[in-house]
Image (tube, rainbow, N blue to C red; front, side, top):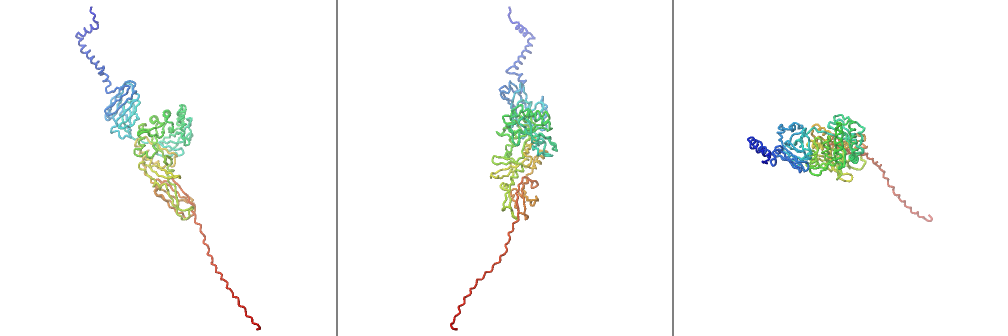
Length: 624
């Protein structure tokens, strides 16, 4: 009995037949060949399907292209094996539309203020996206200048700015998601904004240089409610088209109540109350938004402050209102890194309409290679440059050792007007000569211009004999500072006047020109010392102009006795306007005449009496 397996019998019969041979030759053998190619070690199907892709395991990995661009997946960022492809498309091909697939709309959608400065790097992923990645793109020659270079991502629906920093010859970004593509872009300047912060008592009328006014006078209470002068005031009729965003501070009578804000941030209930109070104030009073200026926050509350600002921004935007946020000066901790304390610039910049970053106050920061350039290079890597307003103060700085005193322009120049005089005792006599001098300017050699710092300075000694150096903040020093905003294509500038008065009046001219043309220029100051003598009625009797380096004034007391005032002021424009002054009063008297004594007659000498001789006795004759 044949015990052969029926299946084997069938195969033998079939394969041995004419049709079986054909099936074997044209079907089975090719199928086996294809199967062998699809299975390891050839894996032709996988290689065809994932051509150009790199497998990334949970241990991480990287993808690199011929230009040197890299996409790095850190260990643990991928939960399972995925495949990535980094495909560079030359700029000319990308801009001319030689692109297929869902990135074909990327080139036509580039905003008018951006210009392609690299290939377009298409990023394709198969599998579950990683939780994070590091992107490093080489900078080609078209990437210059670096001060205005940004990294943008194509999301499939539009271009989105990405935080990034220059490291060597590469631009490096830390990603939390993989976009459809990325490219380096050269940014273009836009019409700059100018916001000015002033006390409510010093609001300007019709200043054309402003786009936003931030009146002070509103502060937060410890329970999250609002208080201050602006609580009972309405929007200001300024006489020109400008946004009005009141400043909300935690400064009460010049004392920063950081404890109030810290307590608000710690409590979710107080945070909600504070947000609700701000939104209600802005909406009910018809303001355009709020300018948040919370200072001295505990750095440990950085996440809480970010959450607070995010909530506030969302609610204000829901009402069609704006939010600008002031941050405190950062601390430089490395050549390319800064400690921003409680203020997460990257997170705040994503939700706020404007981020006001304070410019350095140390005059030496503006020297070539100083902190100013390093700060702005860091800032535009953390915050979209079109959201940054570079903040300056109009205050002059009076340094004495490690101490610094903020002064208005008038107050600072008044320190140079301390009068010393010599010429005789008081009161003065008619016709007496008096020499008056300004020792501060004499010892400084006048008011000096520092070419590297781009600011004026002078020195003086206080009553204790300690030397001070005063750096002036005027039109000539502000103009080159504004140029930093132009150089980095920032959104604009913010000017803060601590008192609202006593500033250099020429500042408005500089701001107006900057706002209208994006160019900040100011003529060098023509400092002059103006001496004036007035009588008791206020009538000007004498006026003389002297150079600051030799400001001595010689005054001869007039012939008319009375009270006189000698005043001195410093003019920054050759005598047209005066800033800073001092005066000293003198009493002029006529000399008291000394009466001439009448001549005394010389007495005649009394003659000495002449003695009369005693006559001799007559002789006596007897009997005659």
